[in-house]
Image 1 (cartoon, rainbow, N blue to C red):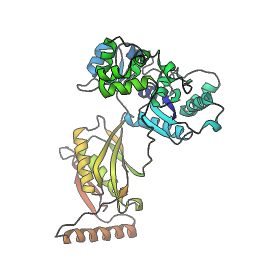
Image 2 (tube, rainbow, N blue to C red):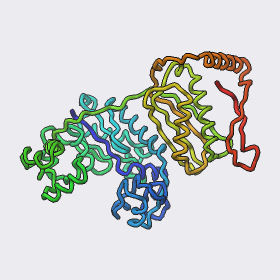
Image 3 (tube, rainbow, N blue to C red):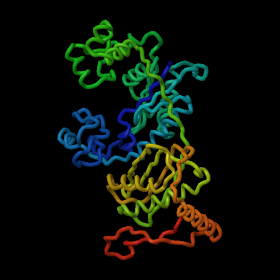
Image 4 (cartoon, one colour):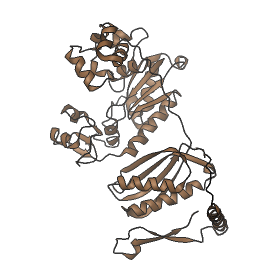
Length: 416
């Protein structure tokens, strides 16, 4: 299958620098590292090419990154912003082909079979994929010959037979350019490339280097039996990839139905109780929607806008679809207790996705209390529909340790 790989290196760094005219986090040309500060146990999410040249790598502990690159600017991660930017890229690619797989942040595969009649040739198709990824202002600058902006989402595009050949073509292309590997030329194209491009474990890569196999062509020149005897099933797959044979299918992303609600706090808060109260309110609003009536959800995402302009996000996938709000609140409480936002929260957004039919469950023997509670909630809903607001309120503990009485408790609407 003819496949295109759209690759934007250092995607998170590119998003951070997107709105900076000088393309630097501090305007002084210092390297940048994203990893949430210099706390213990935290790892590098992404780094600029300057920091990478000094030995900084993704997944490296921040303390080690600081030792290797002490002059770097360490930025707190903003995962929601990165994901939104990548989502915009994926939607733009889906405007060219409906078969789009999101491999990782900054890398996507596009099925291009059958698109020959819409473009002059595959090189023109690659150029169209490059232009689709650019925000409007960057596309205008590129069209007028102003060159690459300092901070930009300028991708490299590779086209070939299968995902691995397309990936190798994209990695070896300059930003803003497309590389097309003609059918039948995969082995010749891959031969001079470094073996580190192969998707293998660090131990296997070290063994390949110890055996003197520096390029993909060195591996392809060996008999399949010898490679498989040395590396097992992984060796067979690497040998096939070295010959341009990639059996891994394209997995286009699925678009699931979802529902979102957001709530803005009167003033920024860091209280777990306030966030749980907001989560309870948002769940009540969501399950009052007709689209969620009689439906269950498989995934819940909580996103918070922080006071410093960044974001915080956590996603929970339930073991089985559920419509139990108490269970969702319990999971939400555990999530917040495990990783509370590092800055005061100004706004929260709750998204429920993976909507499906609710599975039937046998009720208990003594279900009279549940029926009465359901009748009471229905009566309250009718009163709210009649008067425009809930006539019943309840008191919730928010900051019981606060010295200010108004902050200890909160009076909120009772939304059944």
